[in-house]
Amino acid sequence: MVVLNKIYTRTGDKGTTALGTGDRVAKHDVRVETYGTTDEVNSVLGLARLHSGDLPEIDTALSRIQNDLFDLGADLCFPESDEALDYEPLRVTDTQVEWLEAEIDRLNGDLEPLNSFILPGGSPLAAHLHHARTVSRRAERLCVALGEAEPGKVSDAVLKYLNRLSDYLFVVARWCNDHGRADVLWTPGANR
Image (cartoon, rainbow, N blue to C red; front, side, top):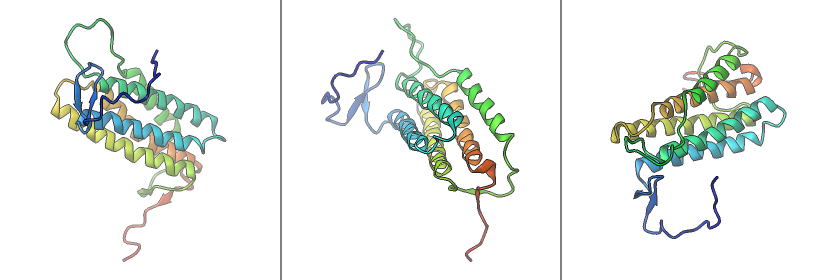
């Protein structure tokens, strides 16, 4: 259990923060940027959920994803290592990735065929989901950069999860736009 009885510690006043290992890194470190961006995705999903009240199955799924994103942040906060530890760090699992894949397949089966690129928008819920999708893609790009900067220190499941998450958010945004019928379609060259 996490206990937070003091919110400010003053330990970051000089621009550093602690990883799960206790190591201090700059607050602009790519690892911190990566898990900070997953936190941003989580916040956007919180906004999306304000509009999911009439879709309880979507709200439940988004709640599950928000919890998974905290798992993902904890995973990233504790770099992969071969060192023996007294405890097992929290890691994202392939089971969490597989759940996203199953949801993508299930929701995609209900959608109108896609014959154009989609502009983010439609319903308020879909617009927030598209926003979360773009932030998720940024988190994925940062995760790739982190993996290149620190080879072997990012789990494969984290990168897979972020990749599937943006796919899921695209599909669920379409599903929330009347199964794709209310999608806002791109018209190439419309304003030339």
